[in-house]
Image (cartoon, rainbow, N blue to C red; front, side, top):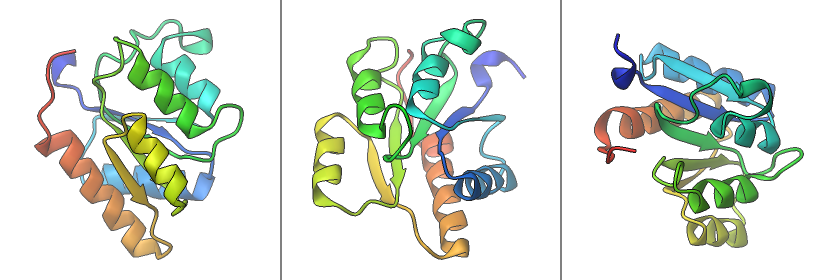
Length: 148
């Protein structure tokens, strides 16, 4: 498969159970060639901007979507979102906040910073898997993005 046709997703999730479920749902539905998992905000930014242990990466060129948790160690999801949307190299990458927070202030702030979608994680296992699969279908298959 040519690299321009690769579908890559960055999953930023510090809860191992939620990460495992999300990856399984994406893989089960063949929605991505590659799902990258990072577990804190600092690592997410290093991955996106090819810094630190990710300096050999070509950056965020093939990412179709970033699925971002709100409550993260080191750098929280809102700050990661702010950096993504303020940088010309990454601002066009769709970012979906996938979080357990239903707090109005978190939702409003996420949209102010440019999040493309805000999804509250369902508590039910099957519904969580279904939600992630539907997110992947929309953002990786149905959504059209401009060239980065």
